[in-house]
Length: 111
Image 1 (tube, helix red, strand yellow):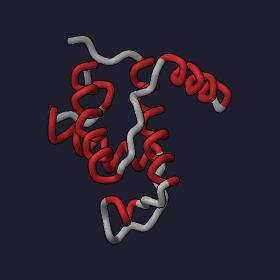
Image 2 (cartoon, helix red, strand yellow):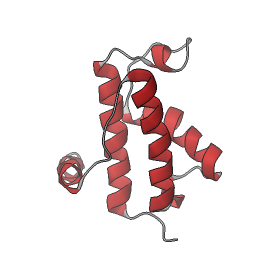
Image 3 (cartoon, one colour):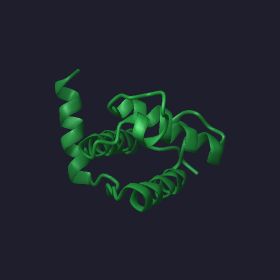
């Protein structure tokens, strides 16, 4: 299967940002969500490293999102979405073309 495109990778990072924002909005710090010894707000990077990457390693024995294909991304997303929906009442749909375009424009402004 082909690896993910730049656009798909950008969608993943938008998802990480949206989920970390939603966790923060709901008062779900890292301490409250995962680890008692961490009490900090979520960020895109924290979400990717602490949640996404750990599930990715467990499911597919890979460490880079660039090594994934679309089907693998969907499977990881389904695990995360199910967990957050059932346990925290949080659901963020996978980013659409429209939200991805906004995200890419924002990235380009910051580079």
